Length: 401
Image 1 (cartoon, helix red, strand yellow):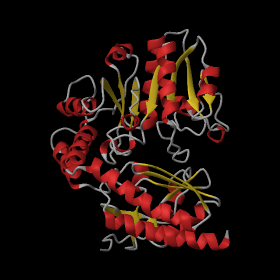
Image 2 (cartoon, one colour):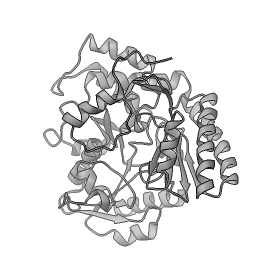
Image 3 (cartoon, one colour):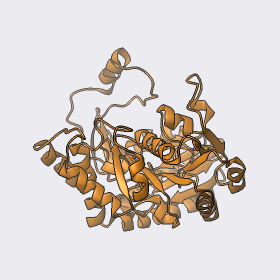
């Protein structure tokens, strides 16, 4: 199945070179169409996408029920400000909160959702308790609050001073957290599985320890679920796969199957702290995103995609475990649902480039980690296809390692 576009990748690249700020490292390919787990470039080449939309396209590209919901909504309302009520926002909030807890605030991205959480924490805790503990190799967005919460110095270069009040601890180190807590501490913020940091999975004892510490010291436990929400870990939300109840969660990426959407959910008793006038989002909760989000939940439920996520996770694990036994360059596998990290002893970027040449799209993060975020509705055949190409590429890399 080829592309119908008459453009070329090069012609589009030339427009970008002339008119677009070059703040992204882009591959020299123009994507023109997507369907399911596949995308096609302007020259008609098909790629199996194992990292669709950086994890945003949790149902693959252009899932039919979501497309139909957006089309129907466009004909009724495109945008209504939050000075009015809309059915779509109420329905999506109900669908999210009945599968989690509390009340929801809507934004447009994960960074915005985290900004809302930071404000909520400080408004609720009062001016004397403003410090928030976050974790090394975590990632919470590019806005100033999210950036200040992100304990990775490479992202801070040249843009300081950052927002004060953040303290950084090693991930999965409870004693280090205990040493940072004082009378000015308001909250602990972390990803239940670190995504951009390399698919780092904490111990259950660590998470239980954080919950106990928060209860003991009157702190709020905030889970950044931007990457782990909407079934990514095999449960609706990442916290559910660990059995740990946070006070606040932030959501985005797959929340509306590729449509820009973010949310913060907090316990009922915290919600009044975000009082009128203290926070807002012009486009947050817009009817298009809400319709897409509701359709996403319905599709996950109707097609039993939480179960499929768990089954396909195990299929990936079997393929990659066998490959690890064969190739010493694979140091470690880290898999939680369809969040997959393959730690190599060599740089991962060449693997990304060679897989792309062979028609499979993957990601590299933190220099040596191959990262996959396949859609929840990936099929066994597509898992096998992707793992076959990854195996070929890693075998080639092993020969020159």
